[in-house]
Length: 233
Image (cartoon, rainbow, N blue to C red):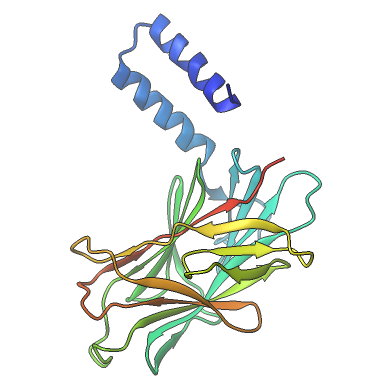
């Protein structure tokens, strides 16, 4: 039995002894996990927009600044990893994020960067790892309906991005070729729930692109991959 299963069994036993119903138990467990994975303002930052979150399952702390995020593992692991959104657009129409400073919205386990009126970037810290997603509210009228959506992201830290065959995930590796972080589970859907074709593509200088075929899509769109450690000691 794992640590998580042991803890759950203990809580379940205590809940039953206290005469709590299954619904009561579920609510308590949900509140407990939400508190364990909460994102909080980071102490000692020079900006009011610094946040941090501990993930007990992954054993890493994610630091959020106003450019993206950076993950640092606990213990003797000598790596750090993160991503920042560089730009997005359709065809030749590009919108640079660059050095912009976003508005922020914090909801316990979820942090949202409000970049502009079109794109929001959000993060959820939970038992799976770090869920990293985007909401695209609309396709600008000046953009061709046939032009696909593309997001450009830059890797932070010392790990190298290697796109998996088929483009549905990325392995972030050390210089020795060891995969440390898995960025996978890519899924994109529109306002009607329709799944849209999407894939990652490698580029140069520690960046990669996410391509989405949105020609038949109804906005807004939701983009949703998850980051996890490839292995845990």
